[in-house]
Length: 115
Length: 118
Image (cartoon, rainbow over all chains, first blue to last red; front, side, top):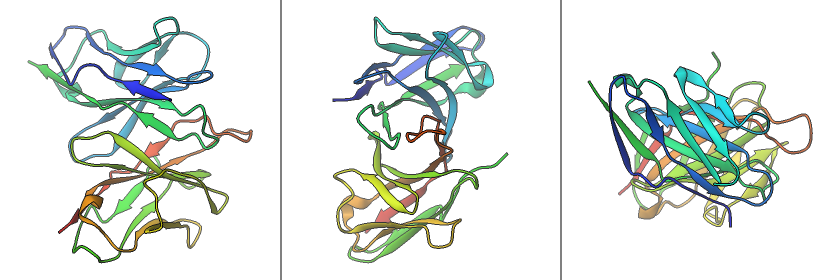
């Protein structure tokens, strides 16, 4: 079965420090991977995706993610965290058995950046 | 920048009543989706819609649910007889789709409608 795991409910980091939000996946076929961010009372905002090509993908707001096929991971990273990055982050994978591109989401990780 | 919009932002209804949640997807998108998120749980897929028909639905999407694209711009989710367990945040999403048969592009989500069933 297709699945996504985000092993950390919450990640705390000091402003200016690098951050990593972890994600591992299990899919049949080639993985199409996505990161979304949710601010309070807002919808899910697309950050970045991996479809094919370079393992390091860059996205919005200075975020990047590294695809690692051998470890089936797609960790979200940022070199220098901002307080405004504090939000709920979701990793998602396209269901490989679906012909409509439906997404399977992880449970979400709350990122808290402290000044 | 184009965005997906949803109305209302919050809907309170009594058990057994019908509700209609409305969405306006991004105008050039071809694939439309509804997801829901029960408080404290994962975002779950409900249904996808393409070419004016349901293309896929989850086991959650039973006979009490229906979707419609009545006028080429709105995309609605109807729950015929609401239950307490339908209380959740409902997200609409749309996707441009690939030139081929299967969409590969990212989905853009609306802000959600919080449905509270009492």
